[in-house]
Image (cartoon, rainbow, N blue to C red; front, side, top):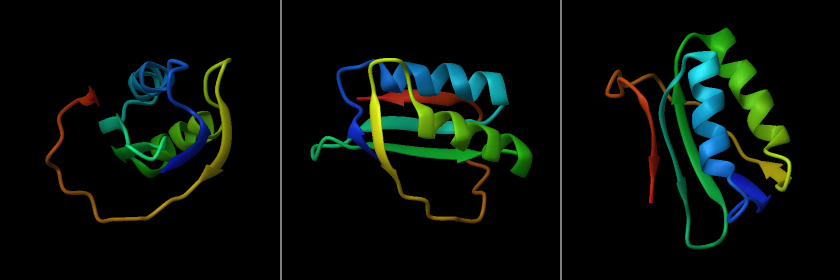
Length: 84
């Protein structure tokens, strides 16, 4: 979960470009409370680099908090998509 000023600033599309760059799959979506949820799967080094970019965010975003929960990869995702 990414919290701060992260909706209405292009954050989801920033995350989609970063996912392509780091070759991770999953999704990004806005949540009703103003946060952004990201689920990412891929090689550990790729996911770490992706998380680092998410913590920075796009130019107009202000990331205040990144909350991470580690899960076992599901293998469900074949691409990274923007939801909602």
